[in-house]
Length: 296
Image (tube, rainbow, N blue to C red):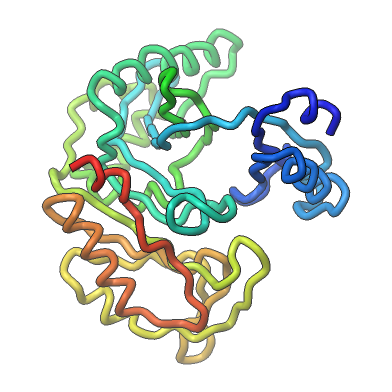
């Protein structure tokens, strides 16, 4: 708390362990930051994951998700995407595992793409090799595009959620040979990976209250109607079978994804899918993709 007071600037307080994507609390005022430290270290809101905390500077800008496959030497970039971490419209509320995503993300220009590959991705992969920790697989780089350029918010060794739901539907090439090439060290032979031209959007439907405590066991209806909409696929996240019913069983319940010729149509189609689905106290953001649409 003394360190936070010395910073005299907005910070983010982060549980130092695994917290299902919810272990980051904004501390835009000193009071908020102190409460975040109390919540994590004293109230143990994240259990053992909160035995220590990391204090990070607040980064102002637009988020972007940059995903590559690597065999430890060669890096194959995927198409760009953007997640929406905050729980409510306008990027307000609390931090979540992700309330929706879309691809492509116009914030990643060709110039920015090259910068990230040259200044972030390759130095990271080469650095791992230099310390005899050859990294193979998926490298997810969570970025904030600030006025001073792209800054790394996080690394993950997996596809993002919900980013995977908008990246993989756009992948025209077979994924399995790419993954095998990562293992075998032959990824460069697959540099001509093919992508569909369509855009994709995913809306996360969550249990009311998420990321705070929420009710489960609510019956979900309309899944078949949503899946029947052209271009719509409903991915299950926090659901389970209860007799003849599908019921809610987690915070983020469904990822309603749509592909279409352009981003506007993909987002509109995804929300058509959302409108077809009902369960008690369902919560979802109504502005997924607003940054990209605002650029048009």
